[in-house]
Picture 1 (cartoon, rainbow over the protein chains, first blue to last red):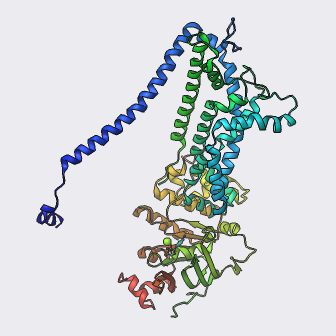
Picture 2 (cartoon, each protein chain N blue to C red; picture 1 turned 90 degrees about the horizontal axis):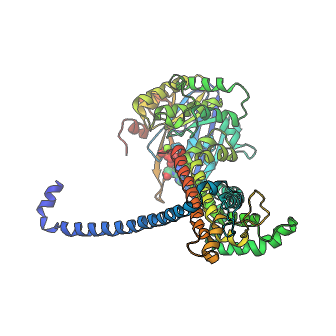
Picture 3 (cartoon, rainbow over the protein chains, first blue to last red; picture 1 turned 45 degrees about the vertical axis):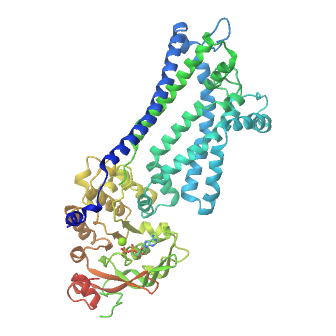
Length: 311
Length: 269
Ligand SMILES: Nc1ncnc2c1ncn2[C@@H]1O[C@H](COP(=O)(O)OP(=O)(O)O)[C@@H](O)[C@H]1O
Ligand SMILES: [Mg+2]
């Protein structure tokens, strides 16, 4: 019947198939070109890192890189113990996660489960503003306010540049990320699951802890891992507030030199281009890249393994 | 028989009694003036066209409507003579005595074992958990199918098995009443049959209210049937009301109301 209708008025239906195809192909080509640009850029960056890192390891053996315990690339008896920089990054990032995880998760729970419409309307934009503050401002805040006004009165002898202050403020900076991604994960837990728990006589708290959070676990973990990647890759706050002093150990009250801060230090002009110290920045960058990559692979695996499928 | 006869059969004890029940969503009245008595150890079916308020009335009995911000309940519901909407009644406690099975199976994303242990644990069960899990799964006619994989996720089961897991989970906390909202509507015919057989079994111990839009199902499993219908208001929305409530064979063979007759013979709307 439809076909008859079409045939009987066929002069009204004259699709221009050739033109459609042309438009289609043009759009395809444009999008492919853009996709290609990002692929090329990624390859270019990784390639540079690899080439310069190989140069570096031609001079300094990888064994020295992982076994030495001092980081003194500019000294005449240079040492390249990456563990020194890693220990600094772990301190700032670790403190940041200790701040961002509980704060972020609690505010996500509060926003999605407890807050009324009005509280949400105030809290959400506030978090977005927090997320939008440039990290250099956070760094300045850590250096000029948190350290002297808040921490030094509490911890006598705290150095003016220290991992603690940088870590705390870094935690604040990445908290909105944890909140917003965890909230998405919590929000995605279907209502029917909550109803199932309530119908068994569960209180709100029991429902959240025993049903909602476990169901949202894969999303929460991937938000956490993204936050960790952010924390170890963050540069401005640690450069400004944690210092430039290579310092191996776990003490967060001293000035430390993180991996990112070292890279800044080198490319800011502390080392002549082509020198071994200059090359070492690439090896440090490579180490950062590998750490982040491993985290992402873990996150990918975890989410695939633990994501619950709901219809 | 009078159209709003609350109690079709005066022999057994009344467990739940709705009086002048009106439910509103925001300013819309969804259900008006329902009077209904549910007697002990019976299966009561709620039938009627969709949107006439069957689920809404059902959710009043365990106060699940409390969780819907816009919902408001007027009138009274008594559970063994206690008003369940009285200010001193804890809805959480009430729900542990009046269980519920939902339209779509909604097992928790936990192991089969944990799905059942969860309710028991939050309700302070102090006995042997393994035994309780086994017993509940047996009662729900699921034990033989899952006894070797209790550690597996409940979500890995088939739809019919998931629904029986949800029934097992509801039984595990020893409720007095089980509310079922179209428990078979998402299931295949064989699973449906299994759940229906199960309802027949459970009737010995529990009072069951089941919403269904399948009239054969209502006539197969229920002792009493309540027929709801909806009528349009001048504002344009629909209000559900209880047309007739009687023994199931009366409703299906000799209903008092014209509307009921039309509905069960498929001449509706
Ligand atoms: N959560 C809700 N919010 C607002 N209106 C609702 C809600 N649930 C049901 N209703 C309305 O109440 C009426 C009865 O719905 P329901 O009880 O689900 O009917 P039934 O189960 O008989 O199909 C419908 O008009 C429906 O739109
Ligand atoms: Mg319904």
